[in-house]
Length: 268
Length: 268
Image 1 (cartoon, chains in turn orange, blue):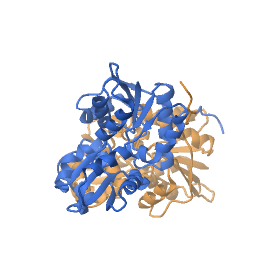
Image 2: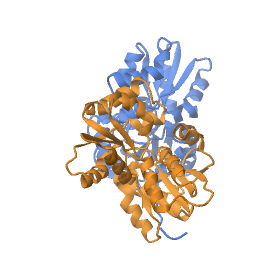
Image 3: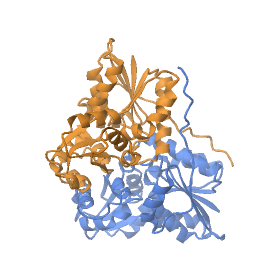
Image 4: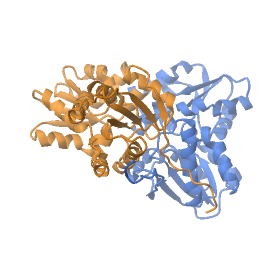
């Protein structure tokens, strides 16, 4: 099978790595919408439109037969719209929120659960709803951490600045939240700093849980596998920053054009 | 006259405020491309395409008769393309780089000049070329400061975190650069922190110099003036963050759609 993994940029490479381990026999097409990153600060409507444009490209031009939405903000805002659009074509669409919540509750042994995410992910409430549906009496803290993405994108993962930013966002959770869901694909790279600010807390990221959930439906695959990378903006930056996430330089990477169209200039 | 001011988001509101003072008798349409912000990390090609799409909308749908590119990254990468596109329609296009450089050299009394900007602005080299053309023997330091924009967008303008970020980027300029060009419309909001890290340095922003350069060509205008705001993503966030820049809440604000088109989902 040919599986599309869609992310706003590079963060979803953590999901890709887990998916390759869990499903080595499927072909994977990874699309990072780097021309429109970040999704986390945009309105729900804009995230839905961007997500539909990306999914449409993957389905029609890359002929994917299943779609994994690695971006938490896109999973939060756009999953129902993507599932509705793909339903008539019999293309299953998987998000990261439900698998992440299941993994967190499996590991949770009491106390409060925290969800860290972008402003969009926290404001959209998908994590809070998924937790409340499974554990209605659980104490949940959902915390937007908007500077974490730019810090990770700049490779600023250790030292005083990221620690102070983390302290400002989540210091109040110390000795309070025992399980912390990293509700953004960038956040696993801040594990060291978050471990210092929240000693003893279990940090749960959804990459492996999502890969498990997808492989439970699609199987491990029986082909020879293989990965292609698509980006909507510069290839070099994707390869440079992507190496932090993947451990190796992502390759081969192709540029794809998702617009906007530039109309000719004429008198009004 | 009807003048379009174009920015990647909210930072250009500093240019708008200066333009209203200098040209109270012209109508101004401000367009913030908030659905695609930030421009500073994107490739030159993508910035050119986004800029042309925005300019085309302002010319054809908003019927502007002159265009001011308030965004430094767009001025750096896209000014020639915008001028070429607008030339046959007799629409003048103004950027912020040349006026900023002129203001800096007027104020400069010796020592080195620093230019702080996004990765795109510094990498594009427009400031460095404009300085070298006027003062070939000047010592120039061009420094990318990628975390400044997210810090300002989050309203994190004072205290340890922005000061440490500023120290990491520009601490080496202390007692070395006497004039510092704030080559991004967001940076004037970090004046306090930059003043602490670079005591005694002259901080030059291009908003007033740009407004002066535009009014020298177009005059102050003889109408009753007025401003309209257009954004490509959520109106509320623009009003909330924009108030930091403008001192008042920008109003009225209208949403405009610059794509991408979402094609219908069909079988490949």
